[in-house]
Length: 70
Image (cartoon, rainbow, N blue to C red; front, side, top):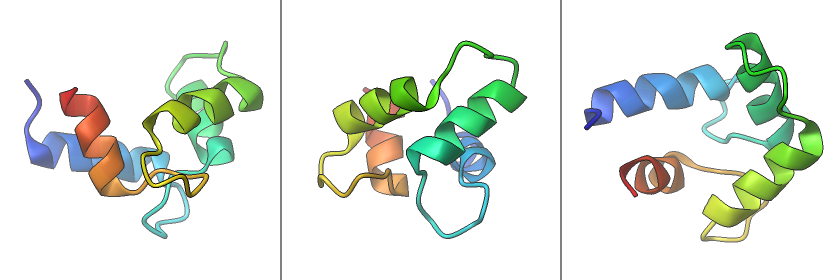
């Protein structure tokens, strides 16, 4: 199991502009930069929608953490 610090580091990698939110565009871009070239914007939107418990259209750290800990 990943530590909170490891999950925060991964969150920060996805949160490319550092505003504390992972948007679908940031998610898709980071996934592609990490080697997963199959992630499209629409795929990222669908994935974030499943983890976005507050229905904000993006992920904050608490939602990201909960999803990673599953």
